[in-house]
Image (cartoon, rainbow, N blue to C red):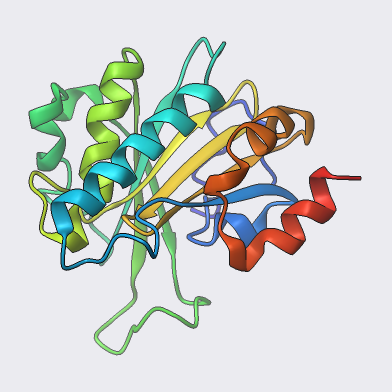
Length: 210
């Protein structure tokens, strides 16, 4: 398979969502969640800040969305990992709720070690019930590196296919948000400007302050 998103009607120009959403989409924001002001020596305090910021951004981004999906990806051989969906059981999701989208070979990915055989990136998708369920799943994606449980080690993407919106929390440090249309991010840029990552601010200013 070369395009796991092919079965879904969408306007994204990619066969699968990248890890570095901010750099791969023309219109994107990168948020600092845990922040430099809260040390990893205080994991609970850091997680609370990251989770609160993540919830706020997600609520604003998907305000007005009729349907939001969660897509997850896991690396393995030709067959997907058997227990990859187990972490989501605590959020009210069962295996039968998910749709397996397929897998894409990572043979051309220089960041993937394939010395022990070809590696594939396996994708699953589930339609979310509401914002509250999204928040539960957001928790799973932010706490893994801080030792906060429950947690998921999969890459997680929250997507509104009809509006062309994607939110990718990569860990307690930060989160990428992207859109097909610039206008869908403009209000979020100004509303949450203080949370944007300073390192990438110049690029974001050039996009949204012209």
